[in-house]
Image (cartoon, rainbow, N blue to C red; front, top):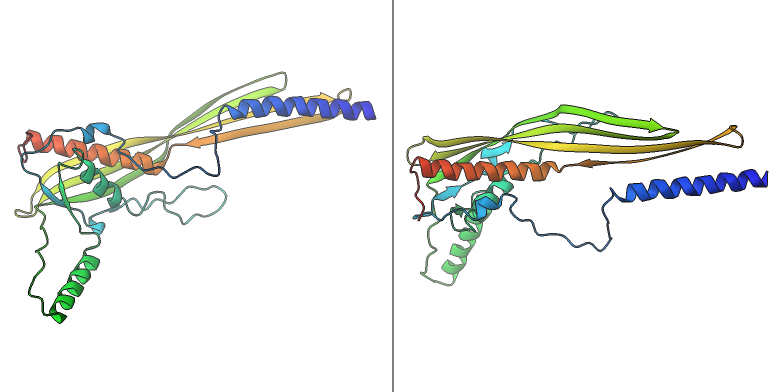
Length: 265
C-alpha cells in the first residue's frame, strides 16, 4: 500500500510540474505592487499628423456620443445586467481630439460638465460682486464644430473555431472567437447645421482560450489521475473601442483636409 501511495504521489508531482510549467508560459507575471499606467494613444499617426493653419474649435456633449447598441455582457450561466460597452465612450473621443497633433490640432471646449462650469462662474461673479469688484469673467469659448455619433454596433461570435489533439492521455485544445465593435463619427457645422464629414470604423476583438489535460492510470490500471489546466485571453473591449475612435478621428481629419474644411501648415 505504501509503494502505491509513493507511486501515486510521484506521478502527481511530475504531472503537476509539467502542467504548471506549460501554463506559466501563457500567464503574464503579476505583482501586488504593480503601479497604474498612464494611458497613451494607440494610433500614433494621430499624434504625429500635421498642424492646421487655424485650430478648429470643437465640442463633444455627453449625450451626443453614446453607446447605442444596448448590448449586455454575454454569460451562459446567469443573467447579466452589465453592459458590454462602456457608457462613457465620449471620454475616448475627447481624449483623441485633445491629443491629435500632440494636442495642437483641435481646440476642445468643455461641454460634458457645462452645468458645473456655469455654476462655478456664477459663484465667482457673486463673490466679486460682494467685494465690489468690477472685473468680469472672460466669455466662454464657443464651438464652431460639434462631434456626434456613438457606438452603433457590437457583434459577438462573428467567427469562432478551434484545434485540438490527444495522444497517450495527453491532450491540448485551442479555441478562438472574434467580436466586432463599430463606431460612427460625424462632424457638424454649428453655423450652418450641416454634416461636414461622416466616418464609420470597425475594430475586431479577439478572444483565445487554451486548455490542457493529462490522465494516467496507476496501480495496475485500477486508479486514474486526471489533471486539467487552462486559460482564456480576451482582448480588451475598451482598448478596441479606443482604437476605433482614434481611427475615426484620424479619418475625419484626413477628410477635412481633402474637402478643404481646414488646411495643414
